[in-house]
Image (tube, rainbow, N blue to C red; front, side, top):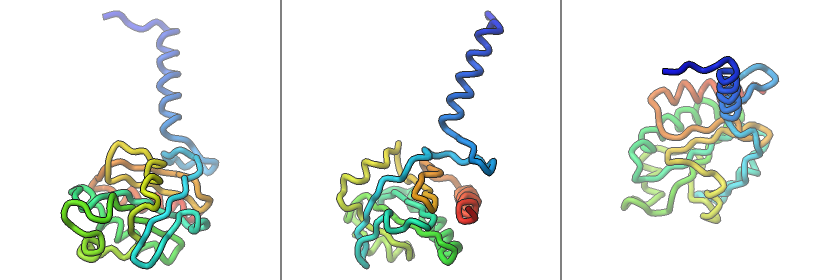
Length: 176
């Protein structure tokens, strides 16, 4: 096996550093958070209590939770999201549950929300095409938006460690 020369090793190391930097960036306070650092595209959901728009929530930390009733990992993550919402809602934290559709997998959205004990604003995107502004490899998909409307963290899928990971990130954003 041939070893890399010093120049090639340097270039390879530089490429790895650039790729890592594209995924994670360091904030002025030294904290590390993945995310685009770009403004979060506005999205509106139609809830049982009326429309809720991300743009109306500036000044709050917002967690966008993209999910579907037929998705087992989504079902597993919803109690965690609900727990985080209840823990931080009085500190300027809001959750927007963005459902895949009004009626999928045989369950109506309203009955699913009630059965899952979801108390945070949840509904379908209006217009439905606005969901395309949040490209993801799958669901559940979480986007944390800071008080200025900037995407600061994204997470594809579900992890049993999700609650503690998200809790720390939410606390960090609430304190800024």
